[in-house]
Image (tube, rainbow, N blue to C red; front, side):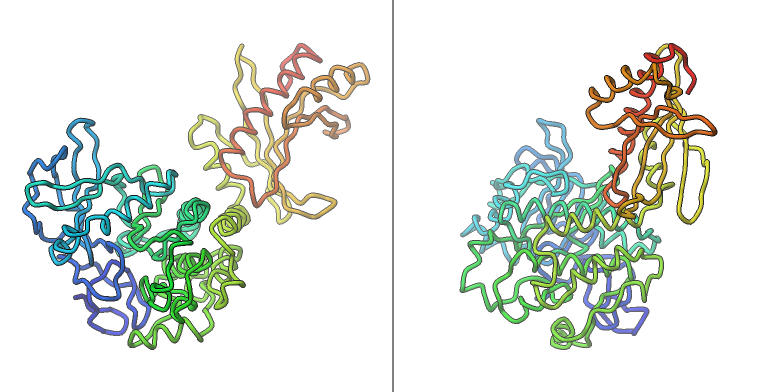
Length: 467
């Protein structure tokens, strides 16, 4: 149990970071999880009791090193695969469920078999299933994600920048897009089922309630599955879940992590469910003004009451999230992310309300170098925000036209054009991207390619190293 600092309510410990009564972030609590009927999936809480005496033991091909956490239905141990010398997470059911799963282990393994269909960098990988023979206990071996859950990260009280959360949620959307592409519905998207990887990304995990879209039976329809604080209105009404149902839970998760509270709260479960059904969703910026407008618009659409008013599936959601992140991220941050793995240092040339201009000096073989400019501005015809990467090559003399056109025809992406510089016209090699969809890796590659191609043209036309 923990006491909410906002309303003083005594709340049963769960993996979710917010009070269902007032929506405030809950303090961290030590000790094992108190399982509740409202808690679906694993819902890990750090620590807990080693109920099977596995710590320090060799079970199957694993050495059990520590207990990562316990939840409403299972416990997860950190283990080392002896033969592969690989750290993994081993999931086993809690004692109250062992008789059921010993008689019908496929019920426990169904999660693993379904998730194993999904091989994607944004989904926790399933490695193996099996049984601990001496106690006849089924287990699932999963990828170990050392960063813990998003729920635990929120509970830690450390501030999280809105754009950092947005990048994590882009990864979650990518995981959902992959699941929906295989007709898999997660049905329990929430902070405790999002895991933070060591590379800074996020992974969607715990497919304990997942189902193939075509196998959600009439017997299951009418029986709400999931966690009430994250449950879509149509599921509350007993309708068949669809991909847009996962989109709604994604929206609640996104809102809760950014705002530090749930969008819908209630003194009791019925009141909470009524809020999902009838109360308009608040704007996340009311609780966190640092959330960029494009991100707030995505969340608002995810929380639409009618499924047809949301993004239809993970693929549409991923496209919208990428667009919003691109719109929200400043050119300086985009450049910082793009060049973080290089020795290149961007220099500010100009910043104004309508134009941001940076330059980067790119070293090339044979002690040559090329100055590349990166500009965020508006495209003249359609007034679309764009990022332009370009480099001056040589004076635009008529005698150079044939060679310049020949190189232009050989470039796979960039183009050769003519641009004024001072009182003279110059050849430039350039690439242009829509601002909203330009990602850091793409920008880095473009800077390096434009430098290489511009230097090649410069060397061909002049034999010098002017720029």
